[in-house]
Length: 177
View 1 (cartoon, helix red, strand yellow):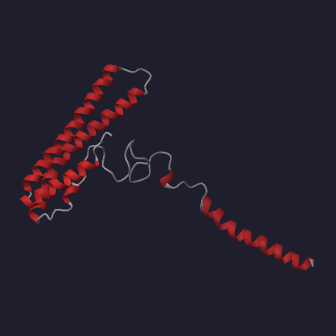
View 2 (cartoon, one colour):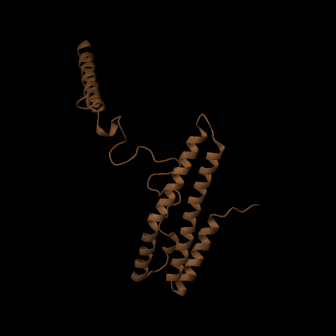
View 3 (cartoon, one colour):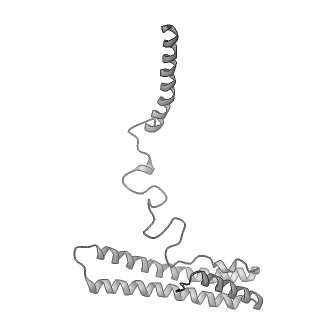
């Protein structure tokens, strides 16, 4: 009876070792002293930041930066219209980016000031005004682009454009009960 019990235990021990040994090597890697570049303590991994800035998700533009106009998706734009739209957006992009960067910097400075040991209300007011002015500039750029885009469209496309804008705006309205 003992002779049957021993091979079973031996097989169980060898099987457990066969399963755990590769997992141990995998966990520690071939060289336990080696730290991969992506885990280095001296900075973020190659190609970017570890975490997106507060309030942002990966793959989204910073607050205020424009996405391609979603309400143009249903319109059948000609090649000339697409080229003109591209030119308009390309011309506006550097100015929009500069304003958005200014707004983000002012917001970051305001957040740092809020948690600092000495809060300066005048400086906070100046930073808040800078942030508001930069964001208002971005919003104004969006409105100007919408007006320029509307001019590019044919009358039929304008009607569709207006309908899609109304649908888009109605989703973002707050209706009081």
